[in-house]
Picture 1 (cartoon, rainbow, N blue to C red):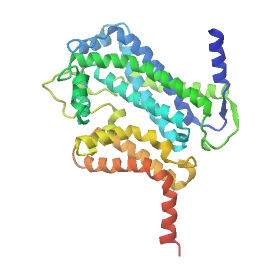
Picture 2 (picture 1 turned 30 degrees about the vertical axis):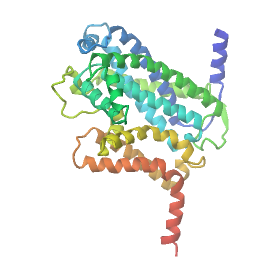
Picture 3 (picture 1 turned 90 degrees about the horizontal axis):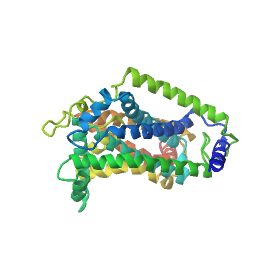
Picture 4 (picture 1 turned 90 degrees about the vertical axis):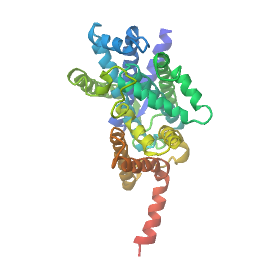
Length: 376
């Protein structure tokens, strides 16, 4: 067994990598380290947690106050999720910019990883059983009722009754404990197919580049990137420990007290803004699903020769899309009022317009406009 493990390890570190990849390729290793941290800290936190509506909030408080180094475990786990999603989005944006979706199997495995990560993070957000956790769980799980025929029954099954309560917490805790191991499996599947197809590079995944061994060149590169992230991560954990917490979640869940503004964590705000931008419930749920599932279709609706850096105008469109994503994140944290409603609608339109239409068609449109209106 040791010999086989050593053989796999040597295969991993000796794998040929394009020599011209940049720092944007470091986020994959940061994601893996963050995932390992989440599984490690979550395993020990599970010793002190019980999925019960009467004691969950007090047990989380117990971990902070009375368990030896419990507050460190709690902060590492909560901030680890922040780092994980930040690295995941950077990894996703880099893949979009350099056309990595042409490696279809690797890309789809990454999309499945993203989908499961969002599910696990939502389940974990409910477990502390603060007031925002309660109402966030009520609002989001109620969205399943928009599904025809099976929606209402599915909501009752998720809740374990006719409202969010102790059975809901027990279900969510079970899923939250098991699904990270599924994510680990998908991560290894992602890596295996990446080694089969080869890594992309700044010239595009289908364009050949010179290769060097992964070790020691990119081993040191990844270690340096991880150390920088660990430094910033530790600074936030120990000097600004409450910077990503919602004050409403420091209040125990109360069915008689609704928060002024129900909102999820920052890594869900863009999807939440898309959901709120559509007036109808079913339409909002449909667009929310497309917010994630649109990435699954990219390998099939765009050509392999299309990359964001292939044109200055394409790059402008891409960076405007990044600004749109950031704007959606900001709008998702704002109340449902003017001007955020109209801004959210515009940003939602451009978010999907860019992903579905622009990459393959902008050059055709631009050539047509130049020939029709600008050329003599």
